[in-house]
Length: 99
Image (cartoon, rainbow, N blue to C red):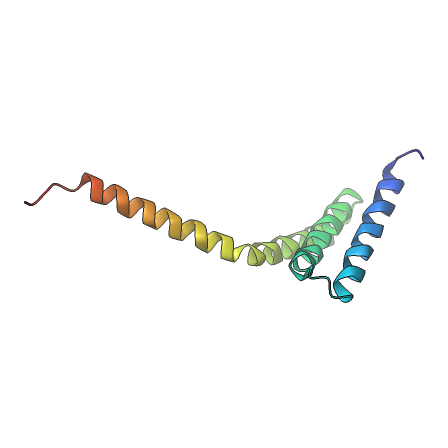
């Protein structure tokens, strides 16, 4: 089988459909399904930009990016908390002893 752009797109669609089907059957891939729609919007926006529909392509791409940013908000909160803890430890190490 020769792999070209259409074959890659077909395999991507088959994989997405398979993930949806597995999710509907209850095999616990719900966390992956939450990322599928924003990623598909980003991909469709990129394709729209490449095909000349600049306004709608950028609109779909930005909406997909914002949705994906919302999905990663928990990760950002963890990173900010870790940064605050690390900064607090560095402040404790630099503070002069008051004994």
